[in-house]
Each structure stands twice: as C-alpha cells, then as structure tokens.
Image (cartoon, rainbow, N blue to C red; front, side, top):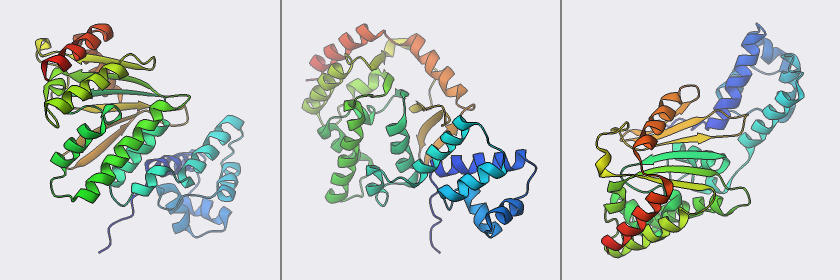
Length: 284
C-alpha cells in the first residue's frame, strides 16, 4: 500500500480557514462545490489541504463566503501562494520526514524563535564538523552520501541568519550541551567559540541553564516556539522517538510558560557569554 501523501502545515492552515468560513456561513461542502462547479470530493480536498486550492477558486470562495475585508483577503491569497511556492528545502523532501520539511519552512518564515536545548545545540548554531558528528551518531544506519546531504541541509538552514531581516533568536542552553564532547574536544572547542561569536549578534540572545539551577521546568527535553507573521499561527515544535509534533496557538501557551520559567533559572546574556567562553577553554 502506498504511503499517504504528506499534507504541509501551510496547506492545512489554508484549508482550515476555508472550512471555518464555510461553516460560519452555514453552508455545506456540496454548496461550495456547486458554486465552484466542482465535485464535492475536490472541494473536500481543498479543505483538507490534500489538493491546494488555486487562485481563481479561492477568489470565488471568498466572494461566496462574503469576505470583504481587503486585509483578510490579501492574507489568504498570500497563504495560498505559500502553499504552491516551492522553496530550496523542497529539494530535500525525499530525504527527510515531511514533518521536518515543514519545520524548515516555518524556520525560514519565523520572525522570532525561542528554543530550549538539553542534548545538542540548535541546528542554526552548529558548525559543520559538529553537525556531521551529531547526525552520524543519530542516523547510525545511513551511508556517507546521505549524511552529506543532511549536513548540507543543516548548513543551508543557517542562511536565514545572514539575511537583511534575520529572525530574533532567544535560546536557553543546558550546561550539559556545552560539555558534551560531540565530535571530540577539538570540535567542541571550535563549536563553543563559534557559539560565543553568535551570542553577541544583535538579533540573538543566548542564556545558559547551569547545573547549579537544579531541577527545571522542562524535564522532557528540547522544544522550539516559532512566532510568525500575523496570518500564521504561533507554532511549538518538539521531537519524540516517534517523530515530530506540532502544537498551534493557543495551545502553545504551556510552551511559552515553560520557556519563561527556564529563563528565570538561567544566567543572563552577558554572564552566559562569559560562561560559554570559559567552557571552551576547559574542554580543550
């Protein structure tokens, strides 16, 4: 049996908004399908995101649903364009889980990212040698060529930090991450020096959660919260042994509260930068 087609988050978001508009107008799926002169199953796939709606059909439905607000119409049209637009990350779609392709898209569109890490550094901060060691350890059944592609993807993701309008990064790092000798002492030393350089960038705030803080608010591990433009929901992301999970606002509130509680225990940005530099000297 063929695997089910992966439906991207952005297609799901657009479909959900179309469903909400239809139901708010008291219309059935067959009513929308009849208006579009399409089969009800096709209209259903528009709402599920399985088949992204094209511009003429979207404009027709916005008229049918009485969406007169120009800002709302523009936001939905832009979201439709996002659904159809192919990004550089789609070139890796056959090599990583669909959920992670969604994450790379979210990362590329985020205006702010908050993250907590307790095992490895955020991929956006990793140097190539560190990334290769981390990926090789986790994907122990993969060949060298596949590892190369995954490392290439991780390095390409970092380009968002070099743009004219990079996202705001607020990151809390458990001290254990700074001391785990991924790739060996020399690799970790270079990685920590690179992290210290990143910490002074105007759009980046790094805080260290020291061992001395004791028990903390995220014993289950790492997570990210990505804040998007107004037309997209806020999204929390966490990885599990069974794959990635996404949580959309308002259910992201618990993640934000967890982040706030971690921040209360963490060192300040300046003290954290000093801690990272000192640790780099210790682990050599």
